[in-house]
Length: 514
Image 1 (cartoon, rainbow, N blue to C red):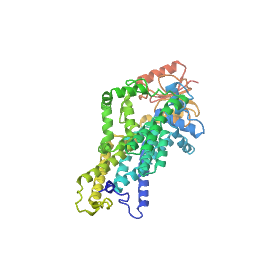
Image 2 (cartoon, rainbow, N blue to C red):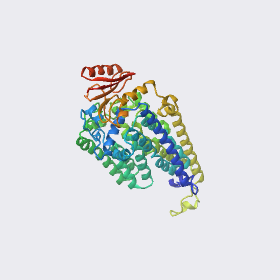
Image 3 (spheres, rainbow, N blue to C red):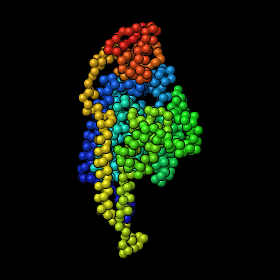
Image 4 (cartoon, rainbow, N blue to C red):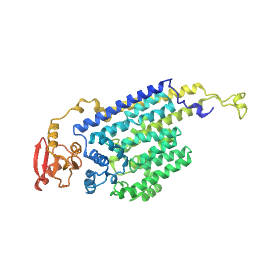
C-alpha cells in the first residue's frame, strides 16, 4: 500500500458546479469577518480608544507614501529619537506599507488603515481553505478557515490599532499553500513580500527554508535559509541605519550578550539554560499554551511548525515583558503557520494510523508477486477514516476557538457597553475641535488619532516639545505617563513655561503657546 493512497484527494466534497458555490461561500465568510473586524476597530477609533502609538505612526507613514514622498513619522521620531524628520523605515523596516498609499487618495485618515487591516486579515482565508481542502476535504477546510478568523491572535491584533502584521497571514498562507501545490514561483514571491513587512521576517523566511530542507527540497530550502538570514542582516545593519535608525535599538537580549554573535555563543554554550528561559515566566508558558491548545497540539506532529519557532524564540528569549504576552499583535505573525502545521500534522497522524492498522499482503497477492506488479488499490476504509478524523479534529478546533472568544477582544462586539459613549466623549470632541488644521500638536495618546488626518501629531509625554498646541487629559491615565497625577504635574510645567489654557472641560485641556 502506498502512502499517497492514504491522502484524501483534493476533490473530496466537490460536486459539479461546486467551485462557484465555494467562491461565493468564502466571499460571504470573509465579508462578514472583515465587517466585524472593521466595526471593532472603527468603534474604538470613533470613541477615542485608539492610540498615537501605534495608529498615528502608521497613518503618518502611509500619508507620506500617498503623497509620492517618503514615509516620515514625526510621532515616533520625536518620542524615540528626538527628531521630527524621521522615517518610519528607520524604526521598523516596512516598505510594504506603500501598497496602502492609493487608499489614501480615497480617504485620507487613520480609519482607512483600520478598514484595510480588516480586509487583509481575511485575505488569508482562500489559501488556508485550499490547503486544508487538499489535505482533508471540504468540510474541514471551512471549519479551519472560520477557526482562523475568530482565533485569539487575530482578535488581539485587530483590537490594537493597525500594524504591519496585517500583511503577514495572507503572505504566509500563500507561501505555504503554493509550495504545497508545487508552485514554487508564486510561493517565493510571497516569501519576498514577507521580507518587506518587517526587519525580522527573515526569521520566518529562513525558518520556512529549514522546513523545506527537512522535507528534502534541498536547493530551494538552502536558498530560503540563506536569503532570509541575508535579508535580515542587510535590513538591520545597512538599511535601517541608512534611513536614520539604530540597529541596536530593539536589541533585547543583553542577558545573553551585547550582540548577535555573543548571544549565539551563549545559547550554544548553555542550551539547557536557554531552554529554561522559555518557561521562566507565567506569561511565556501561557502564550505557548494558548498557541498550541486551539489546534489541540496537532501542529507539533508536522515539520511545518518549524517556520514559527524562530519568531517565538525571538520573543520569549527577550527581556521585554510585553513581547511575552498573549496580547497585542505579536501572535498574529505565526497563527497561520500554527494552523496549517496542525492540518498537516493531523494528516500525518492519519497516515500513521492507516499504516499501523492496514492488513499485511497475502502471500499469493498478485500485486506483490512481481516487482512490476500494480500497487494495491487504496482501501476505502482508509479514506473514510481520514475523512472522519480530519472533520472531527477541525470541528474540535472550531469549538475550542469559540470557547476562547469570551476571553479575548472579539467579546466586545456583543457587549452593548462597547458601543456607548461616555459623558466625557462630548468634551473630548469639543477639545479636538479647538485645534486648528495644519498645526503641530502634542496630543494625549487616546486623542491623537482623531487629530492625525488634519494636523501633525506628536505624543504628549513627560518631555515638553514646545509644540504650539497641546491636547491633554488630566483624569484618565495615558501612555507613557506613570499616572494621571504625573499628567497634571506636566500641565503645571507647561503653564509655567508660557502656555495658556484655551479649553478646559471634564479633565480635557487644550493649551496654546501663542
